[in-house]
Length: 142
View 1 (cartoon, rainbow, N blue to C red):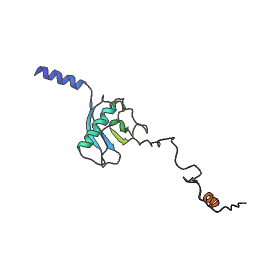
View 2 (cartoon, rainbow, N blue to C red; view 1 turned 180 degrees about the vertical axis):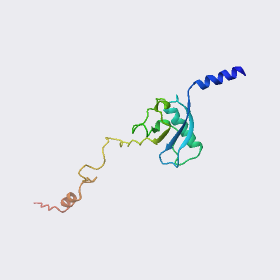
View 3 (cartoon, rainbow, N blue to C red; view 1 turned 120 degrees about the vertical axis):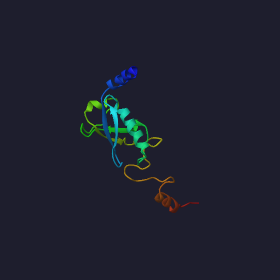
């Protein structure tokens, strides 16, 4: 019993535990859970996503913490680094947003099918050139 109490005290020395509230952009309300002050932002995001999925909330977000940005409205408009400790901020309310998807460039030369001025070329040439060629007067001499 004495050994058990010593192990328990060592675990509590690890750091203070804090109640965190994470609001998901587009979801009904925040998720609250307890974390250690020394936990990294990445592990807090991971825990929040697991709680979100366990509760069966919508919209379905996924489970990769690299696809999300973690904000603290009290600190500023920049996203928090995933490798800093959550307790250093002194805040308890956070917001989790999905990263914007990057636009994929089309395969090939990376250019659009349409030129900048809006005109298009047809595969067989222009209609006007075809008409002129068809109706051109050809005078043959014998």
